[in-house]
Image (cartoon, rainbow, N blue to C red; front, side):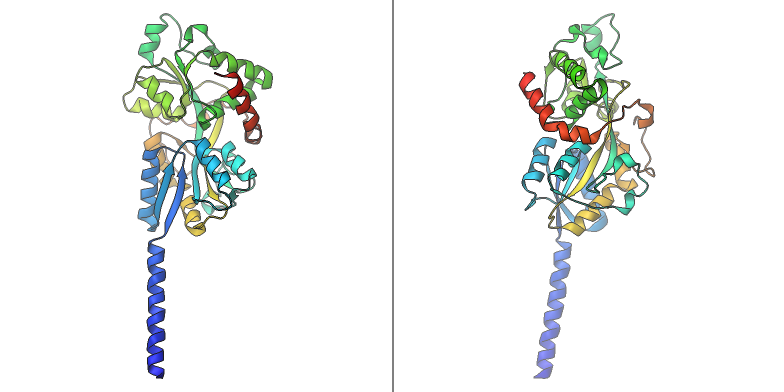
Length: 333
């Protein structure tokens, strides 16, 4: 009887161990991805290859995913928010939707890439620029110089030849709006933005749209991230990239959801995204400037030190978001 009991216990222990092992192998991390589909796929596949942890992701716009994170904070459907400027992660953090985590990988990162409450960490630098389709510009604006500053965009002759994403849906455009408000001050900033909006021919929702529309010659001028413009230029599109002085520099961030159902896996994913290997992969695909000082950049990637940046106040950008977008929605048609 004792031998039978012992055998039964051993069978139960082995069965339990096998079940635990299978559960570990079948563990799935859920990610909300703001970065592009191609980059998300490559990064998550490399993470799975290195850790054995499967990843399921939803790719959508910044506004949609940040709203999801906040709405779902008590019962999150995802574990990690990948991408999006710091102001959006600050917004989610202020809503109590993010889990603090200090990654050892980020110990040598610059201070601007780390949050004061430890809820988000930057993994690549974001800077804004002006993209110009040289052929269309020459056809439309013969004998005119291409715009080199933000002020030079306010040219009545550019009406309907500028493309800018919708700041209500796109973190890229909201960063641009804050760039002007913080560069010029509230009143003059809004005067600039409303004047410029009258010249814009299209306000798409996706931050990746302007480089495409400029590259294919549908518009002469567009406002986008410098790295996005560089990427399309490397693919053979007719794009000249201008890095105007007094631009904003921010970081694409990664954060963990409060009440994550896969906290250990989420921490491993954050460590991976902050690694030199992951950031070099991202740079090779997207021409982004890595935050990790150990990561190497590819040719065509513009180092952040080559761009004249303003002292960007992320906290202000986050706190003003609702008010700014209400003013934009009311005044820009």
